[in-house]
Length: 295
Length: 325
Ligand SMILES: Nc1ncnc2c1ncn2[C@@H]1O[C@H](COP(=O)(O)OP(=O)(O)OP(=O)(O)O)[C@@H](O)[C@H]1O
Ligand code: SF4
Ligand SMILES: [Mg+2]
Image (tube, rainbow over all chains, first blue to last red; front, side, top):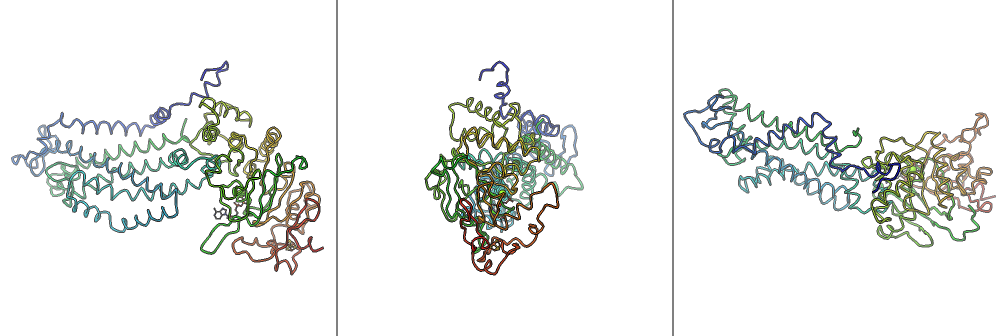
């Protein structure tokens, strides 16, 4: 559009690119930026694990140096088999974080879609989805996951499937109640009065208004899933040893809680920092997506 | 504003009903057999207390709600059973301004996005730029400064938000608009401005309005004909002037008496609306729905439904007091 003499059109069509706008608002929040930097450092470290310390060191056992405290040679000490805890933390983090992120992502997508369908269309569809969900939820999460992993055998993919199945139900309920609430808003009726089709209503009105809550919930779930993995490892249903993983490291460290507390400390700290960074990013995203906080 | 020149009504409903299912076999009769006619360029005022079914009537007429019974004729076509797809082209001709200027606009859309949405849906203009510049024209038309185009609703006050709703409704060039209490959520000073705006727009675009309100004084000047609703039924219709001079139904009389007057002593004490219980529209018993609150209630009133009959030309009432004379 050309500017006309008074330049007023220029203001009107300037409407910033959505992503640029969101990024601009995101950057305004200190917490979000700290979270993002922290996450980049952690993720970068995990991705570059092979350059920092070879995978070999994470699995090779050195019985001469069992339960060694942190030193120059072993910055985070060694575990009960004399394996380098630092190497295990870096290489194990790759597995833990990718499982956690993937499981969070897939459960969020599956659960949100089902919840949105149930809430928006209601009636029989809603009934079918919610009754099936009740069956799912009548079995405790942990039993359910154990059964799945036990049946399929412990491996990366199967763990992913089990975690997704254990977590997607949260999203169905959350998103369904959000959508039920939003679908009753007058602005949805206004869109109908203008002739909007369901697809437009969902994409243009319901999702943008529901996304904030979903994002925050999703980021909270990353931490929960990492911890859940450790429960599974503790029960011997996590990633098969000797491959390192944060949950497994925690599980193994319990045995030496008094004699070698650093074994517990470093994986815990890694989980806490990772979870915190993701939560900070989630909070920042929610605020950045909300025009109420624009300024 | 002259009925004589238009032989055919733009909108007509016959025995229109909308029931909400509360439980199995329990229905709430929100709209229970409404007959009305609206001619092009005219305004029908719909008045009644909160909960009497005004909004439901407005939404059912433009088929945002599926009617339970009766029929709706628009431009001579029976649209009662039109599907959502069949209704879509008609959305350009019939629009609605919502009661609540806060919940009726999406908080995450900018003003220009809200106003241009309908035009995008109906592909009114060939390009995005043209659609936006039309939306800006709409803003000017309703007296919203251009500089608000990129603002978000929460940055504007109630009066301006209501104007966004008005501009949105106008953007499709409709012939008929349901105005659902378009000013009752606003401050008194802003009410007058927005009412004047609606009247100007009506003159300029020869719009027909159904103007819903709970406040008789608001509709007095804007309406050609006024319809008084009580619990889903129409109790009295008359040309605006006639209704104010010669109200026949006890409920209308009570509503008129409740309009604040400069001198308190002039109020008719006999017709205070506070007395009596509002019958619930859930389990309807035969008889006049106003009986529990009516100062003139007679035996027959709780036995039969009063018929809706013409008491004077163009003036119809449903009350035994009038109809049994
Ligand atoms: N979706 C619904 N489901 C069930 N009952 C409803 C529904 N919508 C409205 N009602 C009921 O129908 C009746 C009429 O409601 P409506 O909103 O039409 O009244 P109104 O005259 O517009 O009132 P107000 O002045 O408060 O806007 C009320 O008793 C209300 O509780
Ligand atoms: S019919 Fe009877 S109860 Fe109803 S308004 Fe008339 S007098 Fe009152
Ligand atoms: Mg209403």
